[in-house]
Image 1 (tube, one colour):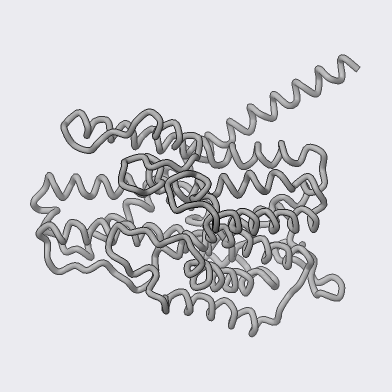
Image 2 (tube, rainbow, N blue to C red):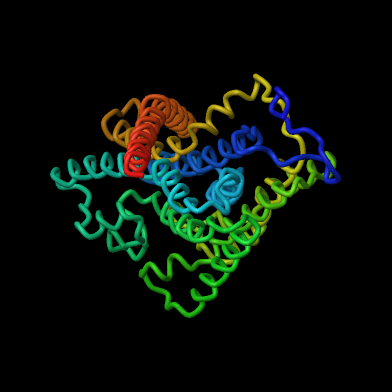
Length: 391
């Protein structure tokens, strides 16, 4: 690998696979795009709800199918698991090491934001506002178990956007079952497990039980990302013109949303069924393949904001609902803010979400993850010392 971060030509396929420690700039930028799509979509829906309550002149923007950002996240997740686990495959401690990495990355910030949301919800409940969820719903949320937290017929956690993490954790569990095998065998077995889960879903009655939630076809999004990761791991490259066609073709197809999957009423969630996979998951995976099946571009300074947002995408995803809550409260309390143009209010909300997420990433997520990893490393070192002393 050269100093610019590009990987060099080697062998018949034209390139070596990127190393696990290499920054894949295109993936970072796509992470940023996925997060921004979700934030703009949620913010647009929130402002549109306010408009329906008396403010005219604003319609939720439908320039892009914002909800497709979730599919992009899932495809990227499958890809990254293959890429980042390169040195784990086939190792005897692979399962434990993989789970440690993923749990320390996902759980602390999610539990923190869930607890913060519950604190806000408790204050609102005491004032006679929103219904506070049951203890069972709260426990299920912390354990990533799908549950109808508010009795509205949706298997959402108390912090509702955590539904995507319920899928992520299920995928990680399946990945952990296979990562101890050599890579090709592991990913073949994982593909079989995903397909078996979806096949089982055909026989699970439509209900709110976890088995139904965890057997939806949207799991294929992770499999599509795994497929791209395996192709990259084999060192396959494509010509630049073909890559551009794949990248832009996939993006344009998703943007056109030919089935109008993401243009439903405000507050509705797109069904996690085959149409979503075919019209969103497949094209975004093609776009990802076009982005990564060749030398990485140089990280131009003009693109550093996207790189930064890619780094902070998890914080951006988890913290942006608090910007929506703030915006709604300010509108309720301030007639001047309530009179603002809807598009201005949308821009201010998205900007606030980005700024707060960057703050959370630099001062909460990164320090918390570093300290937890250091604590785990210290514990592992002490165990090694004890083993050496007893031998």
